[in-house]
Amino acid sequence: MDTPVLPKTWESILNSASFLPVIVKSIERFHEPSWSMEPNRHESSYEMVYMEKGHAVFEIEAQPVPMGPNDIIIIKPNQKHKFSVKSKSGCGFIVLSFKFEDKVSERHAEVSLEDFLNFVRGKESGPFITLKVSQKNEISLLLSRIIKERENDELGSEFLNYLLVLELFVLISRALKMEWENSIKNKSPKLKELIDASVKFINNNFERDIALKDIANFVFLSSSYFARAFKEEMGTTPISYLLKVRIERAKELLANTNSKVSDIALSVGFSNQQRFNEIFKKLVKMTPLQYRKLVKKH
Image 1: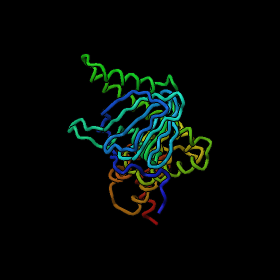
Image 2: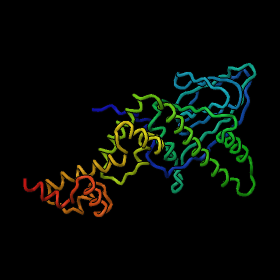
Image 3: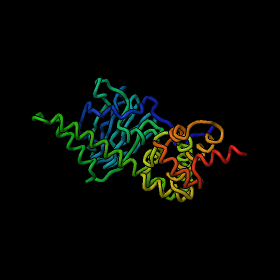
Image 4: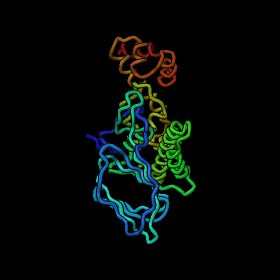
């Protein structure tokens, strides 16, 4: 059995984007050098910590994680962790505790926005993820806005805060995706593994309605970067490879079954027979019916 290139993680996470982030608690604090937090865990919520200034060390499931200015850490639910200040001048930070809520049933679950899920499922195998941002980064500015807006009781503040939280997770998803992409650039063995993983994804899902974005998302790369890397490695574009796989399967069905051409077209992933006929003739240099007649004679 092949070992997956990108490990599956956080077993409780569901593959659904219907659950949206909801802030449970928000805190902005400053702690003196002597302060430390006793070990604790949050059973059903994530905890995001943004270090505004100073240095500290988190210990998450016995793994030390140094934190400095503009570092962000997101801790998975039910992970034992503690925190201690390391800088002589103390440290200041923002903490957001959040869950993901089904807006229809209002039940909570350990799931997140689709892009965030793709990152977590694809890149991280541990109990937390980390991210470095600049002081004037949109994420750090947005965290401060969320803190202030949650203290505001004016008309519309609840709705505005909801939109700010959604924006926060979109920005985090983008930042994590960029960080992941940058981490594999110029690392040909890892990049080759990702291309191999995308090839397997195409081979296993060619009959579905998949596009370049779906294949790139599977290995958590931007469509443009993935397309370039795929062509460099495979000598063809991802879509050309997808079409070739579909046509090869169609050739098998034309030769070994009596299924209608229209049914075969749908079964290998084409939305209509006309498109299938065009691609088949382009690649095989004859129509599907001509191919069937040819192979049936032999």
